[in-house]
Image 1: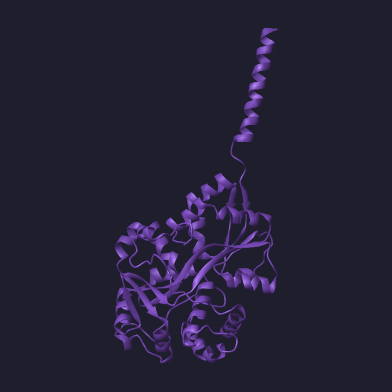
Image 2: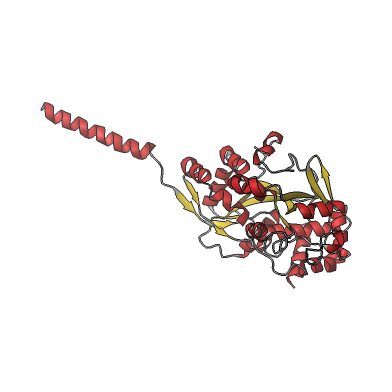
Length: 352
């Protein structure tokens, strides 16, 4: 009889242990799919990010890379979210599809210009770029004037560079960074005033000529930045991309950055525009993913390891952790983008 009760007691202990394991042990991870802008792939592939998402939220975020405007028009079967780099993409979604289940600005980063020291110095001598407290700024009105006048690199003392002064961008009809720069330079060509659906027609000929000179344009900011690093100053004298990209590169490639960091330069357009990375939930899973991405720990990873200004982090004291010269603690010279309807006119004209 005694052995019977002992056996029964062992059975109870085993059952409690099994129940406890399933109650307290790791929960199964829910995989969800969506479209992601290339500039955020580094964050989504970060092991700390993935570990935190799985541990705290039981989520694994799978993605397919796409340009911000392209993803709105892409097949959404089986997708739970879109994560473009702009509110322009959200406005396009609302215009073509309707109001999404939910949308939230999760990350921010200003549009900046990347170049090399010799280009920066020549632009500074020409009065297009200025320096203040170790940071560099491009006067967009003066840059637009130089573009309209057809000035060449040789005109500012760089005969080794081919063609007219320009900034290489992604395709503005497909990708947000190119789209934002199109809006920014359109404003500059309009005398520093935000273009609208009437005034935009005055600047369209110069704007179309500016982008026509570029030839082939990448559709991903990540691909453009990668080409900038690989091809060098001859092929890519200047590009327009996101501030976070060089910060992320410096953190994830410290040995390479130590060798090349003094030659690569960040220049803030004056004024610039902010890229608000808005997540669009297509279903309940996407809605839950927004909550997860807004978690303070996730936001901290996004800033300290990938350079996205989140609002929770990104304080003045922390900008030095990246080891990138000239990073502003606060970006103040920001102007609005043209409204969605005006950008629709620009995109349509640049598509022709």
